[in-house]
Length: 221
Image (cartoon, rainbow, N blue to C red; front, side):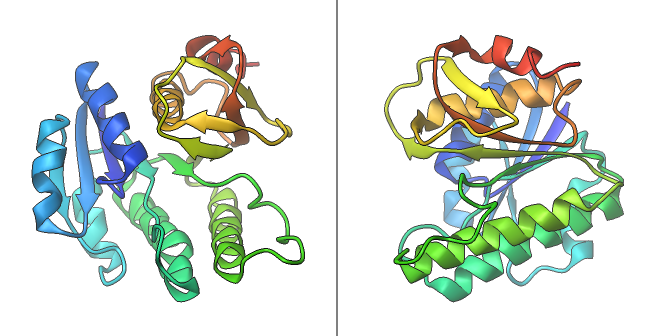
């Protein structure tokens, strides 16, 4: 497959690029800074410089032409304020979905966040609350699109611990928990390669005791 990943220099995206390239897929990563290109090349991915906060639908659609799948893994990142949570975590996701539709790319995966399906509780840090609202609004927009075969993945607390290959993946609530970024990337790769049961699902993900491939296969009817 050819897979285009928005937020191609992110910590999950780089892991996913290495996995997919290692399995023989053609991978492109959308990045904002040309200086990030070397890291993508080292991961086996084609760097595509395009700023999702200023690009048009047509700009992005050109990069998606001929792709079999698109993955939105971009985020404003730590240190950004509430305004950029909206322009990246919400608006850029919607723009990337618009571009996927324009380019005729049906398979569309989103890296979202646990807690994005409800209003943040009182006392939540205002910037984190803005992040959760932005993620939730983006998810709702993408779920409304019949032209996309979408899957939304909502990991728990992300860590940089080595992956275990063992997860809990659920269409319901997993409860609170952590998950290594390695395992998030592994689940994304498995969802891309075995989409039978995951289209139209919003999934929660934490560490667990089920091998990634088995957890994804269990989603199939």
